[in-house]
Amino acid sequence: MSEGRAIETIAVVGCGTVGASWTALFLSFGYDVIATDPSPSAEARLIAFVARATPQLEDLGHRETGSLTFKASLESAVAEADFIQENATENEAFKQDLLARIDRAARPDAIVASSTSALLRSRIVADCAHGARHIVAHPFNPPHLLPLVEIVGVDQDVIARACAFYRSVDRVPIVLKKEVPGHIANRLSSALYREAVYLVEQGIASVADIDAAISEGPGMRWSIMGPHMTYHLGGGEGGIAHYLDHLGPSQERRWATLGSPKLSEDVKAAIVAGVEAESNGRSIADLERQRDQLLVEILNLKSKVRS
Amino acid sequence: MSEGRAIETIAVVGCGTVGASWTALFLSFGYDVIATDPSPSAEARLIAFVARATPQLEDLGHRETGSLTFKASLESAVAEADFIQENATENEAFKQDLLARIDRAARPDAIVASSTSALLRSRIVADCAHGARHIVAHPFNPPHLLPLVEIVGVDQDVIARACAFYRSVDRVPIVLKKEVPGHIANRLSSALYREAVYLVEQGIASVADIDAAISEGPGMRWSIMGPHMTYHLGGGEGGIAHYLDHLGPSQERRWATLGSPKLSEDVKAAIVAGVEAESNGRSIADLERQRDQLLVEILNLKSKVRS
Image (cartoon, each protein chain N blue to C red):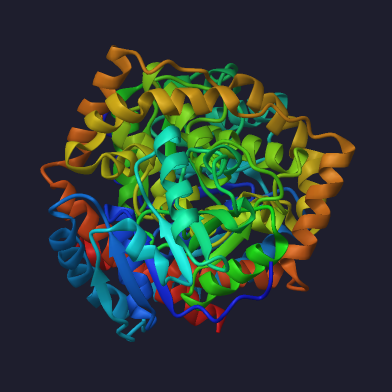
């Protein structure tokens, strides 16, 4: 694929939480956004979301204001876009169909990025004539705050242009060398969650205490560095090589003791009751507000330390 | 066990990184510490560590100054203590022996807390005449910064007094209802690490990108809330109940695809090379300094939002 023209206009297809969050982010960096969604209430919800997210983005120093246009027609929304971010429902047949429609309507040099968390790129682009310009670009909720974008593609030039674009909106793109179900971050999250569910199933501790075991301990380190680097610092002066040689065997022994729980009705009920106790009357909206406020401040801290 | 007298003097047994970090913390809350360690260089290293940690503790608002005494003799170090924090090497036979010696020398109402990360309480107290006053109290590195303390015990009064003590030094104790190898946080960390190693083994992405998949994504959320609460917010208005009913099956499908890697020589070499590339010339001391600086600031943010 040729270099393509500079990215100025972005189509956002599907304006649920993820699409709305992408929209707020792109606008705050001065990109023009054409949004589309078949739901009659989508436009109003999108505008309300952008209004809520904009002050957070301003607190992060992102204060440009691109123009926002809503179009009911998918084809006319994507026709003029340089970059298309698709955020429709996680259904393989539905996405195959949708991406094929986008592929037919988009300019030939536009990049099409799917936010899919669970589907494989190779499957959802099966019906696209120009499959090579399609990538997976999976963000983490909320995408306008968390920097991670997981990229899966087949054309190195498309991948490079997409990474440059995401860096231009202050994201941290990472590139998978092969596709794998759940990409990377959700696989790691699921691995951790499997054991968190096992500890509930086995009655080892309350849900609130299992959560605190992360948020008051290793979770605080993981907001700064990933698991490999964490064990590098756990190895003393010998670093990760020393860690793996001396404590690798104890990791392998522990792996052998980890659980394989089932989400039975009893386990689900115990988790729901435990989360209710942990919430202690705070609504989901309150918890989200507190989380997002902290995320903004942690992001600002991290960018200060880096610069 | 009776209520015991108020905790004023703490013996710290074993003054490696963990013992030294505990010492700095206890001193900064005004407790008097009697430290002991058989190594001839231990006292000098302890004093140097406390000098480095004290400004961090001051930044967190912990500005008391207890008195620090070093005693070469284990027995005389623990004889006068109200609370004993043991941090010796992770060897079951060695700890069994050491705890039995502490048990004989300590006052009968003193609580003995082992920092063990990997050993089972029931095994290491096997030779103690007064086993009920022994608990596991496992901190996370660095203990003077990270609030988590995992408690395993058998006597509810001892557990309650220990929790009150750890809360008095601004820790967050969590109580295991049953002992289990690796307690809670290291089991969760190991579960995540197993998949992080699998992704290296399978060549899915670079070590740096796998680490970024945590630190730029879910790791930032986990510094604020644990995995159960995270999925509560991932369930939309229906919360965790909705999440488990609708996305529980996809979690279970993903669990079935998670890997069981081996830490072979090839995999270890790939991890070591990847961590070296990710470090990009930064020494372990530099990385630690940056991490600890951020941890102090994140701790201050969290305590501001809570209050």
